[in-house]
Length: 237
Ligand code: ADP
Image (cartoon, rainbow, N blue to C red):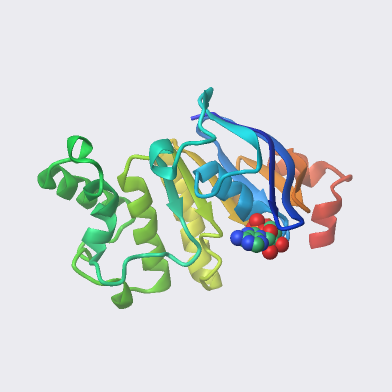
């Protein structure tokens, strides 16, 4: 899925969180939004998701204007920083949720839902944990459930907001490997937000560097490393 973001603007009161952002996300790429806290990364991601509407600008999904479509209409899979799992539901029911809330005509049968959930549990290597509740899982396992839940709806795009932010260094490292592998296996256009420069440069096909609601630079990790005029990266070192 190709995504075109055109001159996006969004203010909270008098503060411009997005100040004219334009960007093309290529089909199947793994893109990082990198920048310091408050630079507008989450606001941009939520606008692409359809979780919040911009004041100005357009968003096209595969050439079709999606600016006024909801998250569900865009078929976006979204992973939040703090898992956002349903605490009273089992792992199975959490992953099945997005399928069960579909309108009747589009809802798969329970047998098909069970087949999909099993396949996703294998993908994130959580087989056998389907009857557990989120409180019985580690942070890394919870985030893998969140990832499986986002993938269950067979999204057109996968968006992740600081997906590893709440986890310790070892788990972060494992999950990075996961995300890379899942991206490789699904071929999904994937955008993740991070303020961790190493994470962005290690994982992403291309990195978008943001500050103060604008894009400073877009490039592959090697282009960004090699460009001596990247003030942002220098700031981070
Ligand atoms: P980042 O993800 O880069 O940390 P955000 O996009 O979350 O940045 O936020 C950019 C700025 O917009 C921040 O200064 C934040 O305080 C402000 N902001 C974001 N969401 C809201 C909101 N719902 N209400 C008021 N201010 C907000």
